[in-house]
Picture 1: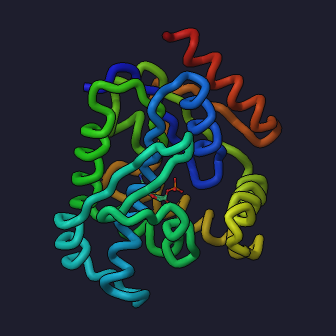
Picture 2 (picture 1 turned 180 degrees about the horizontal axis):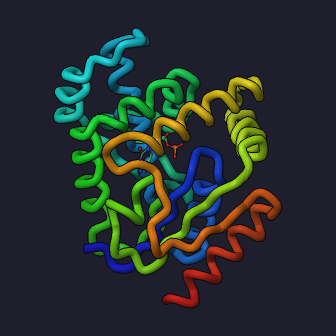
Length: 224
Ligand code: DC
């Protein structure tokens, strides 16, 4: 069992990652980025299969059994390893963005991920972010936050993040991808993106990053 869990869910670009990372740092908690794990699995699939539009579900299920994904914190940076190779940057490309939602909707992929995520959190204090953290992965989390923000604002933030990683992205394309993923992630049959009944909603449309981090930190400290 994990010791203390802060579960942060929300749509793409809602500010979850920035907040989760910063709050984990301030509290000295482990930062568990579950989206990065789904992205790494998607990258592996694309490496095996190429970018053909139709997803070979049987291949995905086969691949996942032979995959190793590790989240490592080195020099206060978070790194994602796929089969022992650092793929931190590769998992953020357009190609991965376009395939990650359908691949993460496959029930066998989700079962594998949830098991891994609980394993990683074992015995730790964690800030865990994703889509189904407060509802499925850690339904007993001590703190549950649901983050949301206006679509255009989310797209602008995502574009800025990509820019910082030297990945050029057109704003319209970013908006399209966020819309597609929100729809796919909230309407899938297995563990869709939804607010847990006991989650606190944090709307980040009109607040700064500093304010959203302060707010979530305050909520957590009150529970600690
Ligand atoms: O948080 P992110 O944008 O890096 O997540 C990428 C995708 O992974 C997201 O569009 C859906 C999937 N995902 C998921 O299904 N469940 C999670 N807990 C986290 C991410």
